[in-house]
Image: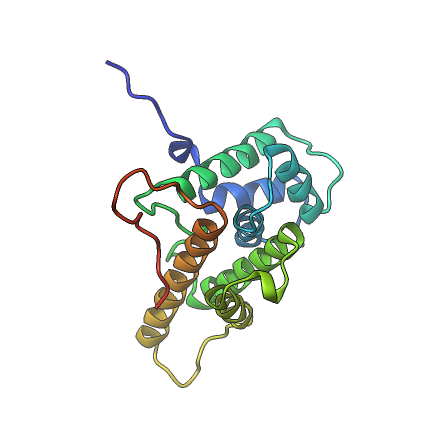
Length: 200
């Protein structure tokens, strides 16, 4: 008996995308920002193919072509894995951010970079206006813009900052799923409403 693997099973880790950037001599962008860009594109509603993703990724990395086949494979796996996560009804989507072994300040900076990438991708691919977005979407975009400039609160202790970072990460994760569900509605095949991620 064989078990078919989902694209989610092959989604690269944060350090793997960071290694791609190093291998391709792309030092002006972070792995978090690359993932945020992809998520912004995918949630904007317009058709976003794998080919368009590769072009967008290389443009953000400021390279005209990839030097290594392993880089192409990692970026393709990222695209397919993230799309599979977002379509999963169990909300398995997660942000691609550094682990706890990095400093709190580095992780806060990474979350800000992720949001910057998301806003770029969403803005470039969606062609949205204020009138085309719901109030929840507009509020979430304003929040993501604020989070993109997030900094540690020096008046709080490390535990409070850790808890605050976790809360922001979860908000960003659910906001992303909200955007995706709004732009990719699932047809209801029974009498019950499909579960939708809700921002509070």
